Length: 68
Image (cartoon, rainbow, N blue to C red; front, top):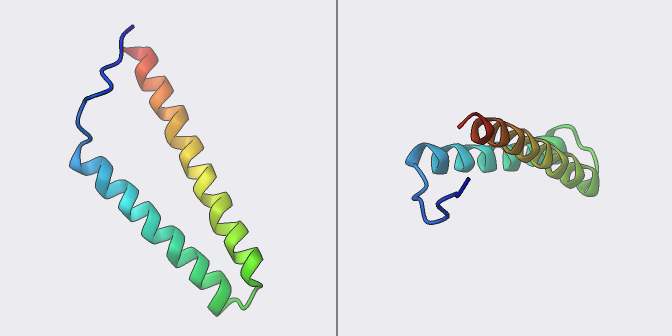
């Protein structure tokens, strides 16, 4: 199965990733400034949440690609 690597990215995808990025920055600031946990703990928590979100996107994309 060939995948067209030059296919344009939809506006919805770009908007979803921008929203995810804004959420992760907000999550970091909430943990650091509101909950007053350490800087490194806040970075780790937001990065971990980002990796979990990307893993979810990867799994959903793999399932969609396998179905055709």
